[in-house]
Amino acid sequence: MKFGSIVALLALPAALFAENGTVQLTEVVDDKAILESEITETAQPAAVTNSETVSITESEFTGDPAIDSADAGNIDAPAEQIVESPAATEAAEAVESAQKEPPATESTSEEVAAAESVTDTDNAESEGTEADDGKEMSQEEADDELAAAMGPADSTASNGKLVLDMTKAVIPTESRRIAGPYGIRTYRMHRGVDLGLCHGEDRTIVAAFPGKVKLVRNQGRRRGYGKYVIIDHGNGLTTLYAHLASWKVKIGDELQAGDTVGVGGNTGRSFGAHLHFEMKYNGVYIDPTTVFNFQEGTYLAATAEIEQSQIQAVEDEYQKELAKHRYYKVRRGDCLGKIARRYGISVGKLKRLNGLKSNNIRPGQVLRCS
Image: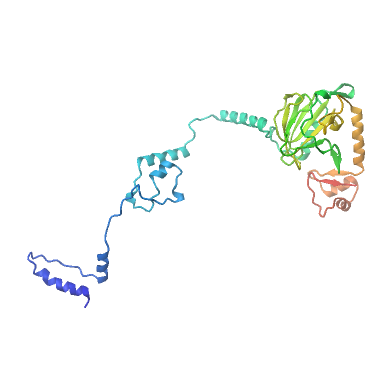
């Protein structure tokens, strides 16, 4: 007989003969349940105090100290123990309203547009960002625009002769190192002088002569001359300053020799920081080394006289030399067959001259045609 049954049988007579006559019935249960009930105590959980350490997971932080300190992330505590304080509630509502509501000060669309326009203009002038119309140009369009800007100046010199007072002229950079001379470069003319800009030296670019800013343009981060400035000097002479990191002028600015144009850099099709400096008289290019001594940081003569007929003759000689080896710059829509017919050669010979393995060509690529 089980222990529980014995206990029940012994307790029954005693209950029947109790003085008060009350009969107490004891539920007979399994001995295992009795033992479990004896060792199990029901107790209310202790309240969480401020002195206890509470574990807070990263996901429980709101980022607001008022909320995080009031609601210490007690997700494991009983529900009745978690009471939101008024401070925590107000802080939470403040955070939600700040995230959802717009700023207190409202502006009309016209005011916003005007502010953005002013900001863009200021940035373009001070930081050298693109100040043109933002239109994406092809390389051909960029080249045509550059040629037009460097064409005959607004006011041409009389008798085709330019006289420059070099004592008032300034070399446009402190650099004295010619990284690329004027003249033929493999398959094309290099129309200016490249002045290398070393790390750590002053890269400020200044106007070589007094004049008026004619064009401020960005051809692209890796296209053409990148950021450049053209100045019209009012006597048939124009100068160009290319591959700038930023410019500090805008179209129409009147400059004196030595005034800042921008900061030299490596924008456009460039493989190192340098200034590409060009001079042009009535649409004909001038070798800058015929008037400046860049290595010495001075001029060749106090007065420079430039005859248009003489510089045109120099240009013709260069063209004759280039004609000995004909080259073609691929434009959009070109194919090898079209180029070969233009120069009277076969496609096979055109591919051999340029080491081409396939018929694929790209705009801007230069092909040897003879």
